[in-house]
Length: 286
Length: 260
Image (cartoon, rainbow over the protein chains, first blue to last red):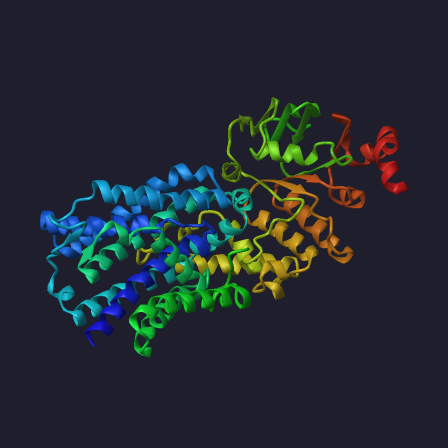
């Protein structure tokens, strides 16, 4: 049961991340491939404040979200001169820059490569309370994202995605719009990073690499771009799929390869037969 | 004669792309409450003029003034705040937004587009959004597009997309409208609606329009004055009747159209 609650908490974390990534890729058309960096910023901020300065974990989560937003906006500003493939490639580079920063500069607990020993409040201590707390925070994030994309701001985002020059022609600044949504996305990812640390109890730089950024793309690609429901479905189905493979009785040395093979086949199938994802309203080509 | 300190005034504009001179010393006044048509062959620089006014291109020399104030250095999105908005020859609607949303995006001063209002209870965003939806719906009805309000714009026929792009520029509330071939590609029976809308905007609402158009019948219908761009400069300008009867204009431009 405890393991199921742990999986549930992980799903919640990845739902928040998928919402954040879908806001920028699906709704704003900005091909983000480096959000693992902001996830790491959130996780390291919350864990460091909590472990070394004794900051209450909920306050640390708020600061983690703010840090995520600030770092996201600061890293976006120099990239605004780029677009399309070049923008995507530059965001990809963020993974490597931040991995090195976490690896070389981030604090670590003596004798380990990362941070452990979080002083968590009661609501995050046991598996069931942690799951419930994470679920409530995730629900709040879903409400925020739903409100955002359904608002005039969300409409402007979709317009910016499709025709930024026409957005300028009606007197709106597409760049402002992109910076704002990137900041919101960074905040959500930073918050998810803090929850991720609280779920795993231990973080190190290897959690925040290109692999994590690709995983985020896969979640929103499978769930569906420009869709809140897709941001929820993607991580829930894929994590459930991955975890369910543990129960089919395969020898442990085969489990990894089989899991990866099926995962790849599933993705290829979706890309061939349902490019917009399960419930998406847009696809990577448009 | 209207003073050039009112409306849009293009003063001695010159533009070149690399070694190619598009036009030189083009001076034009687009006064309020009038439709000024700019006609001429392809490549004469009509769309380039619009792009210069909107800050997309920087003129090689010359000035653009709005109500006596220079627009030098202005960025594209800022022109609308100053009261100038444009349409595109190739429509450039927002393809995956509905027809209604295409109009809504263009409406100015929406609090719901700012995060600080969006998440503040009692900020009146919902009421404002409802009002805007009603206004946008009414605007669509003027072009008989009400029935297509909820359809994605990319699913509309090209003519209707063109009408939609015209309504989008109207929705900005700009007082100077730069219309780049608003009637091209529009079904014949809908052209009367286009000309009626342009006339209404100028005569009833006092907006100024710079109409770039190849359809001479549309120009004849709505234009108060006409400027003919040809061969890197202004071939003729003046009242609509006067210019369209000008021998040089008939020989150099209109003759070719009618022959075609």
